[in-house]
Length: 259
Image (cartoon, rainbow, N blue to C red; front, side, top):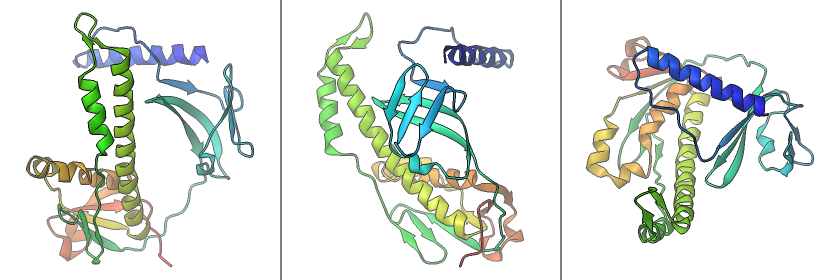
């Protein structure tokens, strides 16, 4: 496992060197206080998963109870993984290979309109309205954090301040995960039922300045980005449907015939 950590450091240094040759500004290499991720190279050697016992075995560390193994498909080849520490919690990102599915083109088109009152309005009449509010607990934690001691020489907070900061980051991570989950489900609905999606390139950043918290609590600006991840390539709007002229039209990967 140490070999893979060293190899990743070498690859990072090479990548920084290439960026420097291209004219990018690269700072000095410094020591870090902690390592937040470990790359697990070989399944069956560096790490193994037991689906029945719901355990993870990592070479040199031992066995651990894990949840969420049901997300891994049955008919797949498990390869590498990445053990990540994030705000005191540990996650395992597993890379798997699944058989390629054939896509059936249904030629269906849907339009999406992003808004403030109704976050998403589909051209078929469906409206989606949601927001993820920041809990009152975060505001209380910020007040405690502001009263914690700060050392100007070392530029570090006290141990209490560091613990409170970790709690704040954890709360924000949970909030962002909720928004990400909503956006993923919306993008999945569109990609699973329609081959083409049309939407305008709305100035979400300008909306953020005008409406502030109402836009922040929804993260609607990420929805086009999630659709682009599932998209194949852009089309001229006239090639798809006359009702969607002067709009950005995207062809999706996962379109199939609805039952």
